[in-house]
Image 1 (cartoon, rainbow, N blue to C red):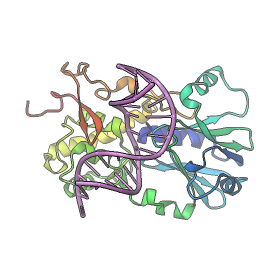
Image 2: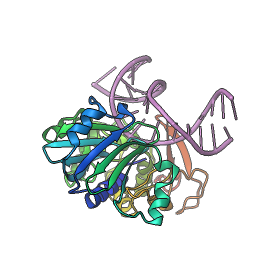
Image 3: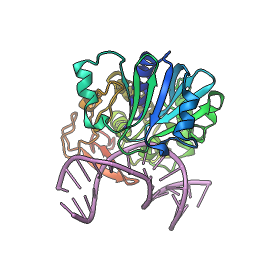
Image 4: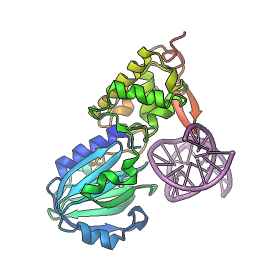
Length: 289
DNA sequence: AGTTGTGTTGAAGA
DNA sequence: ATCTTCAACACAAC
């Protein structure tokens, strides 16, 4: 599931691999992913345009094109952007591209150089919108988005204000609500709260001053570490080479129910909050005991 | 073989 | 207004 670190990894890859490329053609077999435009219209609009840059806000991807247009993408749960080189593909790449999770290809961008970028999307929740670059920030998908948690303008002060405003919400819901903060999803919210040593159901408005600082710092620490490790491939996430990330090797609570806490040896537990699984260590995250 | 869990998001329901 | 549940979709694991 691509959250901020996975999306950042993809953005960095795209800027390395397809910046400057010129789109020669586009193909799609699932028009529902393309919002308010037919594949044929989309194809005509992007043809012969140059890729200027890739950027993101939260988990949302923007690919800016020459001619003032921007391709907005959301990978949702199972979307992968895979960039295949023009020439010979290495054995390792061949192996990864051949994996089943990379085989649900519904959209293809062909570049003049012979490179191609495919959009694989097992569950077909992914979204593609073509928008004038100047209006990209006005998309409803972006307009209601909270501050990106790795943006320099996301300060401790702002974090405190948001907690105060949403004081009744449980922390774990608060962290993953994209309208409040953007970038955090189900994997990292559990990991962040373990790092901070705070139980997930604590209310946003009931945190001690010290705990607020601990959670704030944990957000930056965990997400930056995850970017260094190129994301978490707990299940299907892959980078643009089809390669899994490495953060799943250092997960401390997520999907570790029943296993021993790596710090205190107590069993990791799982609770359902808002119909979703949250993982925590009952000792390390409880300051009373 | 039918049921459940998986998670992002927005919409519908309470 | 605000919170909770469900549907979109596909598949693996029971």
